[in-house]
Image (cartoon, rainbow, N blue to C red):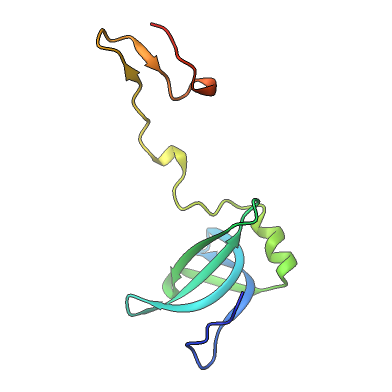
Length: 116
């Protein structure tokens, strides 16, 4: 990670961040300006090694606890940074044939075809 070169006093550190006191995330944090607001950019390491980036406004941040990269990665491995969970989305409709029989069930194992 690199420091934010646009700021004369850049904020760049590994940390654990609590959002609104209820969500705990960890990663590499920097300060950025978006939409005319100063925001915290948090790059959260995932189990696959990829970083997932989230931005937070200052008013949403309950606390920031600087820590080592090792500790931040350990905390990040135990949280789910996804902004949308599967159960928050509408259920997909089942594909049906012209006579109304179900041809494909999105909840079936291995996308198997199912009969009537």
